[in-house]
Length: 207
Image 1 (cartoon, rainbow, N blue to C red):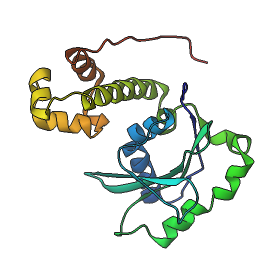
Image 2 (cartoon, rainbow, N blue to C red):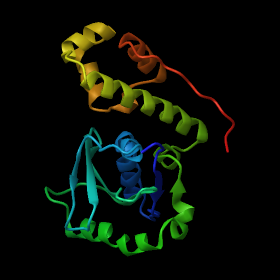
Image 3 (tube, rainbow, N blue to C red):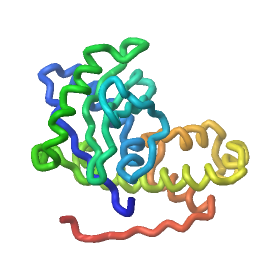
Image 4 (cartoon, rainbow, N blue to C red):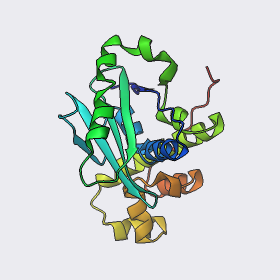
């Protein structure tokens, strides 16, 4: 793809603050991987979910807050549809979560027009609370994806990369695992420069 697909999120409004919090945690944890999907690439941690529907996939994330899952469809050229987000509590995806992921599928036939109120140009616009935070995350995500792709095509070990960057090996492991919340813009720019990449920024008036 030459352009990022447009992410269209279905409504996850909940009167339950705990559930709403879990949805936010799942989306934030999967932000980098959903951004990769928007760019036309596969996420790092995923599996197909044919029992939910054709083309349905599940991103899985585990961090200090727990295990989270994001169920989505990316088989359409113009959009990524996030069907369901939840905190994993059992070994297998529960019947209730499978049902929640399957329920919106018929509406996909109606296309983007029917979901226009839930349409975002970037996953970060949907996740972050302010425009400033979203723009910051977009830059960090772009840098992290470029670094991961570049380093994956080198013959360097993580120990060698750590020496090149002047950081610890666990820090490199966090980078390759997409732990975007652990890396600020300065750190990512410095790493990109050390890796031999040229960083350019394009600034234009917001639409």
